[in-house]
Length: 499
Ligand code: G16
Image 1: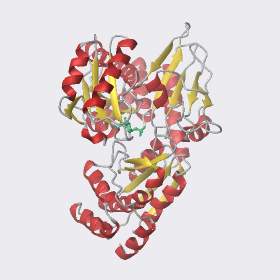
Image 2: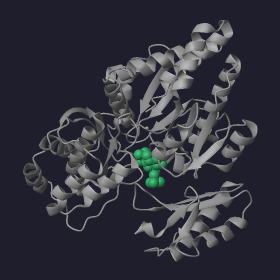
Image 3: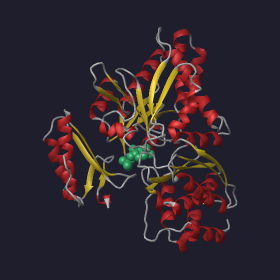
Image 4: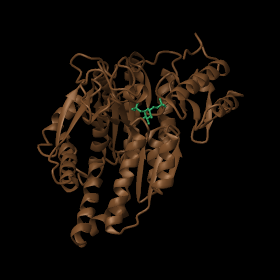
């Protein structure tokens, strides 16, 4: 690595003095205008990580569900999973180094992580549709090239697609072809076959209305749609021609407001769903015949998938061990249902796909979903091989169930100052500031079947308050009371929260 060239180029992507950023829940996120230096430096870091792992590394430029003015960057590790925690620390050190320290920090990381600087490096890059994304991904490329790495820029891509590309490249194409076409083919083939096997007689084609959050999902689903000539008919809404990214639409809006997005026409019993800004979340919803809105969020998706998988396993007579992983945001009744009715063990981790993914890897079949719609199903290599073997050996009905499981495996893309509040117990209890947890406990006692917790967001400059109770009114009122407690005890600024 030519350290002098790096220093020279780094000055062209100068860090605003005094700006400190953390590698948060899903990488760095803040206003786009503060991110040029971070992008350049993440290009440098991706090269080091690639040299160290002797594998392709991914860099995704996106701020996902955040407002259009924000942007962000996350690194994708060799198997398509999130960056390893020790490298998150390196990322934070490098992003916050003052200009004169960049060389030293790079050498420190190389030494600590035993990076062989002579090794080749290869990085793949994707970006969402934000106006700032193209320029910022160019800064990533500057960082890669000046440190001697090679790259492939996929341009506009969804986050799951970038994870897929990284995994394909590191398995030399065994998982699939590292192209968008390869992605569409793999997933649509599994889906079309699965629906053929699962359809009850009479069903011909499913129809689905998709709110694309005015983001990248619209472009990519428009391409993918053509691969579903059978099995699925898709109508796209909020495709970005008029509306603003994530504004009054998208998965985060639907989940947090518990209502349909703007810009979609819904008839009773029509299947509808929403993506977020980088199309790695999905929530489903519909109106029933009486006009009531029903949301199928990550908790319900996990429950539906668990029951479907359990049925199939029962059919083939296999007892692979299934586990479900949730976060503190999971509705208490979904956890009770999974544990008590479905008899599936449920585990709780901190917010962030990386935490859930890690835990889910402990099972033959690990199902993980955040309530907000992030999630997937992981099959261990042993489970995968067993299912494949059974689908070849078993007779008729049993073989059909095993074949369905095989398609399911292919369908899931398996890959992976608010700080005064600190938390413990998978973020369900506040440790600081003093008195806050006690105040929350006292408020929770006032409501039936209630639960509440607070935590600093790792993607936005806000504190998140979660509340549940036996009625919407009680949940709203508990949420308000908890917000007031946060405001008073954690040094809120401006006006006290309004109901
Ligand atoms: C990211 C993470 C998710 C997390 C969400 C909110 O989602 O990938 O795991 O649930 O942020 O995190 P926080 O509550 O810390 O702000 P996305 O869709 O924005 O990438």
